[in-house]
Amino acid sequence: MGGLLSSSVGVGDPRLIAVPVPSPPGKQKPWPKYDYIIVGGGTAGCVLASRLSEDPNTTVLLIEAGKNFQDDVPTKIPYLFANIFRTVRDWDTYTSPQQNLDNRETYWPRGKILGGTSATGASIYHRCSSEGKDFDEWVALGAEGWSQADLNPYFLKAENFHPSPKHPRVNPANHGKYGPMQTGFPSETAPINDYVIEACRENGLKSIDDINVGGQLGVAQLMGTIDPHGRRSSTGAAYLTDEVLKRPNLTVSAEIMIERLVFADTTPPGQSPRVIGVELRTAPNAQLYCTGVNREVILCAGTVGTPQLLMLSGVGPEEDLQKLNIPVVKNLPEVGRNVIDHVSSGPIPFRTKPGLTYDFLRGLISGTLEMLRWRFFGTGPYASMQYSSTALVRSTDTALPYYLDGSAGSPVNDHAAGPGAPDLELLWAPQAVFGHGFPKPSSSTDGLTFSAVALKPESRGRITLKSSSIWDTPLIDPNYLSTESDVNVLVRGVRLLLRIAHTDPVASKLDLKPSNIDPSSPWWPGVADPNRITDREIKEMLRRTAVPAWHPVSSARMGKSPDDSVVEPSLRVHGIAGLRCVDASVFPTQVSGHPCAVVVAMAEKAADMIKASEASGA
Image: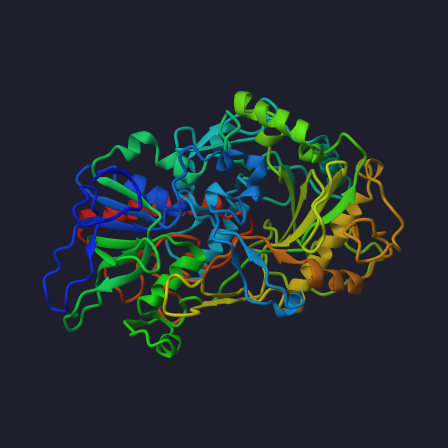
């Protein structure tokens, strides 16, 4: 039963992974069984499938709702990640109307493909190290065994770093050399990028050679999950290689939905309910199938899918489950709660002079020529990253020019993970990007687009079931900008990026207009005078423009007690036998950066924990 399978499952099929309908209660269940069933072939699931199947005596079944990644060109082009959104490779998910964002429903991209969001995101490789402060926070919240020292070996194990002659000060010794994930700097960046970095320095930000080592405060070029041929290295392609897929003990099935976890019919006194298998379908009205598990089911369905499947299976807030007549297996109040997402100001575009950005890629001829350059040589803009650099700062840093008149400005609460950790990120893309409601820019438009991102927001949201069907997307309410401090952190971010834009050498490359233009213009406040714009004006803008930064975590968070968490530090679900969760949903709290590399390291560590548990019989 090895190899990559199609979604077709039928009686008599030699590739059978399941049998129709569950057996009656109390009857022996003649299901095909695997030692491990991994639900979700995303960032974490692919890692676990590869690592757990290294033992030829261990059988592993990986089930993914999306399609296979093989030969899928759009997922391999680093620069065009946003073109994947709202396609068949994406769940096309939206939040509920957000009260503090003018009641807008905001888009939540989620990879629906082997490799998950690592195959559809911005290709940024960021360990969120902050000198270990992020993970010190995790340990303080009850996640023992998840410190920086615990995770660092797994960052290195996962990584295959390719040094760049353009970055001679980056020490390869601080990076992994033999891991599956290819990392490195893009072969080129747009000319405007260097000017922005210099303007950041002019405004008091120090240069960082390697954002993945030591402190993070300052401005740096970002490393990407990009191989030497300019292709994206997703966990699907990196970990599920042809060699791995040929393992006879590994079965990978795509385009199949897990509908529910199946528990043993009876639970002996003093023991926890045990997961014994899963129910699955290929379509809402298709035949229901079941398959069994010998050891564990591992949920890797992400911040939305993992809590949804837990609740549909009877594990979650009792009162919510009873409303939908879902039998309660275990009352865990925190399932779907405590959702934390980074929130962005939304795009703030500036007109630039010609020849400095990648806007020319919108032209048919130039875009085609650059695509051919990427296909045959692995170089050019398409091998670059939309966000090739970043500035990481503290919103409470009085040395930064948020307010030049010496005023304290709108108050913010300091939630940074430590003295050397940021709570605010500035990003920029070398092209004109307009927010929701504006037409796409033409090929003759040249622009630089900034955004400010709140990294440690106070706002907490929740995910709840819409119905008792896995085929109905749950209700997603991140509760963005629900506190004054969160709004004010973004206000400071916008103020700082406006200051940077009006500082040479950037200002001399921009086409800055008077500040009294129509606020409905897509170029406002990108052309506003930073000395005249008020906090009130920025707050009004944020209600119209702020959007998710697409890093939701913590909907099934890790901790010691079932009263305030969902999984133990072992990643086992509290009070449930044979069930673990491994993905961003279990983060105890938000990290100070881009979480993909953290999820990979978590999955690597989880694989070793699971192997050790099996070896010890624990």
